[in-house]
Length: 90
Image 1 (cartoon, rainbow, N blue to C red):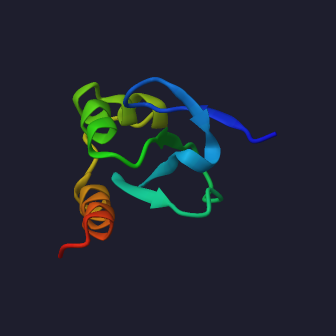
Image 2: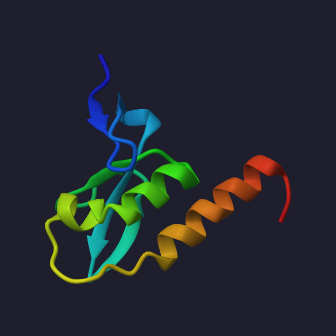
């Protein structure tokens, strides 16, 4: 039985394998590919919609229990590259 987590964007429950784990390293949001980095993690669907919802609701700040703003540039670039691979364009 696969572990179930809640997406911080859309707040729906899904299996761990369907979500991306996000951690904060020095106020930068980073994707934890292996889901093994130390510290608190936030789970989100690998879609633009869920990411935007999580950013609007400041869900990463609350879920990761950090104070101050988080740099989301690397996370957004990574998700954009996922979209490019799916669409077949560059």
